[in-house]
Image (cartoon, rainbow, N blue to C red; front, side):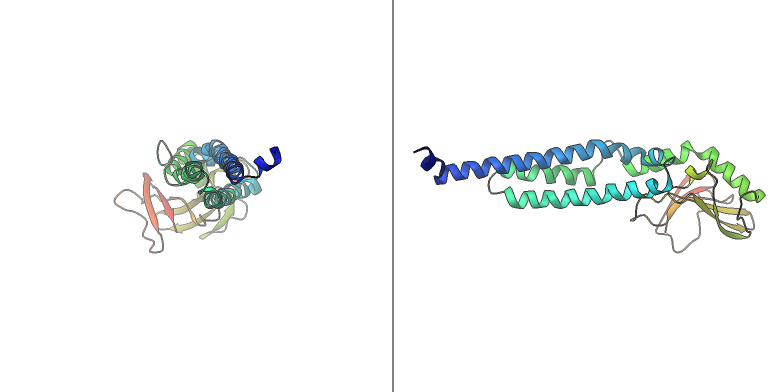
Length: 221
């Protein structure tokens, strides 16, 4: 009698609902755990990674990005698989995931990370510029090119550990990279003595330009 009762349509529905709830709760826990671990990197990722070995500087942000998209795909699959048995719980992991992607509380996480990184190591970047003007770094070849920074200054240009430079009429234009992952291929802080709010960079290929301090602009190409 017990086996017959366990195989009734009502019992099968109850079992499917139980399994669906368990899958959705597992997906929700996975999503929340990811948010807790990754949120510090959203706000202070450059500071957390800039002193890591170069392979970690490049690999960790890409791993975070890859896992985020994998988790998003899993949450979509969880929603489609379980929405008929437990609609609210099925949509909750994906909803939390989407809110995390489009709305970081309590502010613009990427801008906070970028601005904090700029201000934290501004004296070191000024020292790099002084060394470039003096031609101190190995491999330096005016009037333009790339130069690998020594370990003491590599944290100023993530994740390449090098800067590009061009000599103009007013001195050197120096570009410090801030490429966080594979989606951010060419962006960073650019220094030039002539830059101010009324005199931005004149490059036509830049997609985004933002004044951040006298003589400094943030540029995305």
